[in-house]
Amino acid sequence: MGFLLRRTRSSKLLDFLAFSVIIVAMLGLLWLLPEPVSESVAGAPRVIDGDSLRVHGRNIRLLGIDAVERDQTCRRNGAEWPCGAEAARALRNRLQGKLVTCSGNEHDKHDRLLAICRIGKDDINRWLVRQGWAVSYGRYMTDEDAAKRARRGIWSGTFVAPLDWREGAR
Image 1 (cartoon, rainbow, N blue to C red):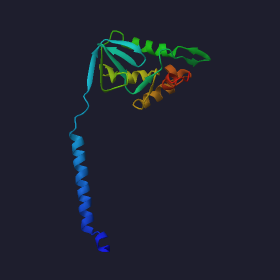
Image 2: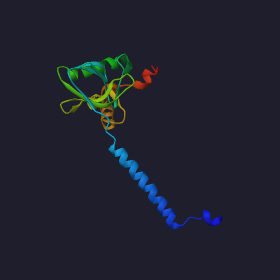
Image 3: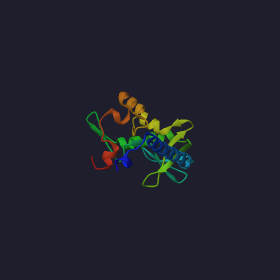
Image 4: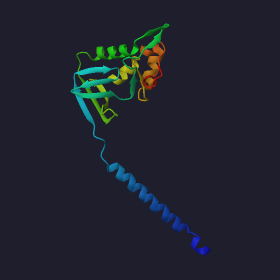
């Protein structure tokens, strides 16, 4: 019986080659799968809050960022200030009279298109983080660091992270 359990070097090599062929075939199939369909919306934006827009009847959530909520307050110089309303106002001022193009291929639980929006080549999502009106979800960390160092927007005082604020940490 021991001779049945003993494997030769050539059978191990054949097993390895078969396994390799299977892996390569699976990777090839993944490569052939279509990319998620990208959706683009362009037009005059209406600001909903610091990280949400409505363009041509389509609700857009700015991808990779999280702005303070419209009703959220922050503290600066010992006083409370309406940082959420300020974030929305800053975005409204930046977009006033401009056309935007928003592109993305995912939707959130509210069926909003998760998108990067631009005025020409300028990334609005990046601008919000760089101006200190939104925190980065990883995509714009160097811009967030620049806003912190310059103490712009919400970084000029203290605030509750927008996600924590939505979850009740007020």
